Amino acid sequence: MEKAGTRKLPADRCELGEGPSYDRTEDTAWWLDIVGRKLFEHRFASGDTHAHALPSMASMIARVDGDHQLVAMEGGLYLRARSDGAFALLAPLEADDNTTRSNDGRVHPSGALWIGTMGKKAERNAGAIYWFDGRTVRRLYRDITIPNSICYSPDGCTAYFADTAVDTVWQVAIDPATALPQGEPSPFLSASDLPLGGHFDGSVTDADGVMWNAAWGGGSVSGYSPDGHLVRTYEVPAVQTTCPAFVGRDLAGLLVTTAREGQDERARAADPGAGFTYVIEGSFKGLAEPVFRLAPETGETGGVTARKAGADP
Image (cartoon, rainbow, N blue to C red; front, side):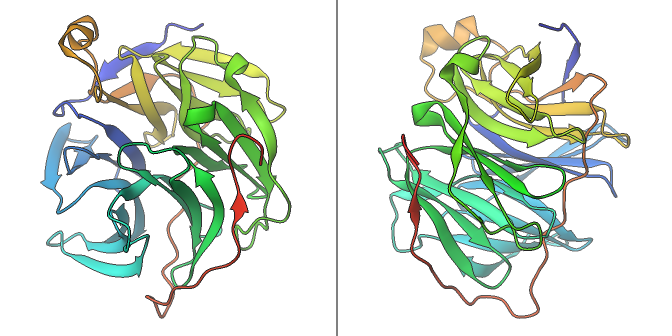
């Protein structure tokens, strides 16, 4: 256990903070309040934070170029214009099912996206994980309750993902050029690997291939080596830690979102830091977030036979 310096960013409390991303070219962090339907923008140079209202629940954001961002929202994957915040649909995502929403997702070094969906009430096996290359949406894994921990090895040859509901993180070999699976998933981490308890939530990998996982209910972020051994754990002043992202020009800090969703009055009083966003001032060896590769022609969708991902992938 390490007691590193942790500072709270000057931003409103989130009901369900998620999906942080850091734009190194602009030294700016972005994250979302899924339930509160807000997009936060924090500029480290000035220390200012701006909140942007969203038309629906959104869960992840990624840079496309200096003028656009990719945003996963209810029912679709959207292109957001930085100039006026307008959204253009790139591809529908379970648009015919109003009981689900997007959840955890991350861009692969190839520029493709893995994005998860889940039931709005966390209905069992209502979610899935999809792949999107800017043109085609493919369902990779089905029967997931709460998809999380989507991230990749530094060489892009391995993908990780979790189902928070069953406390399992899987790993799977993928094509580094496309981010498509090349085999079947195998277990990587289980509940016994959580040093302070809780459940596996969002993750990100560093330059050494260490996977840093935020533990929902564990108030911490823990690093796991590529062979699955615990490297280090940092405590966070909020019980429901949700997702990390490397920040800072040298990528040595770790931003962590948190939540207070589901807490009753007594739990909120006992967890005053819940919902705020923090930066762990460690000496991390972070990797820059990949840019989402926008295809020349977008909007075409497709599908493939899905592989099940649940308690026994």
